[in-house]
Length: 387
Image (cartoon, rainbow, N blue to C red; front, side, top):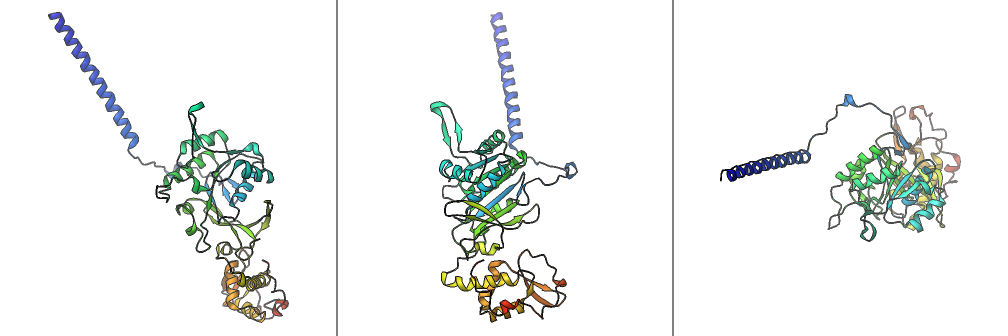
């Protein structure tokens, strides 16, 4: 019996020690989990930050290591623009492309080849894959899956990540609206900075041609506030043949000039230089056919009249009246073209000026002798309908 008591005592001691160790391990695991789960502030003292110049993928439109966005109405050519930028970049660097709406064979490869891109440097992220063999499963890519995106970026090392369109890669609630984009936006910002690539979000606007572009966006309005640069693609409300990509927002530098482009009926894309189209005309309501002739005359009149320098508003209104252009039509053309009204402190008068004209009003001489070209005063040159 004494021997049995000794064995039993030893067994109880061993069991007590095992339980103690198990409790200690459980406590340690719980504390470790709580340390991970409990939010902690990520603080950075500015003195520890070294100033660095802004790196550009395409200055001043696409900053490296940041989010940018290309917005446009359906049919404005946002996919063509995204692929044109990608094709130019693949001559020197790689591109990672997410597209849920465009066929790789019929749309992406066809357009990309026509744009002269290097397909060896162009990669498509098609799905999230799990398992192998007969157990392989494919799932849609979501921008909230930051681990998957990080792996794709590590494997391809792109300088540009394109998401076309961004609405196809957002997690939607059962009722439809996209909920709280800040979590994945913050993660996407970190990934862009980590990999030194520019992430270009292609965003579709609603079909209605009224109101500000941001208010017509499909999806969260937070996108415009988060991206560092935004481009707006659109078609002139007066001439469907006129297209432009305007730079409407930049937090890292000055806005770049609007660039015009064309898309032929055969599907060929071409950059055609700087554009004089104003942002207003890219998002303005469509013009009824019966009003296009008169408005076209007013636009042509203003374009020719203000081509060389700003002019006095009163003189322009007077000359337009002599040319048979109604004031209401002239002011509508002024709005569509983005013409600015500026007050000249030197003579106390108001002037109209084309967007982008670099002229100091106080340096203008008195315009009373010949405020408007004689041909326009005679009503000539204001009858054309082209932009």
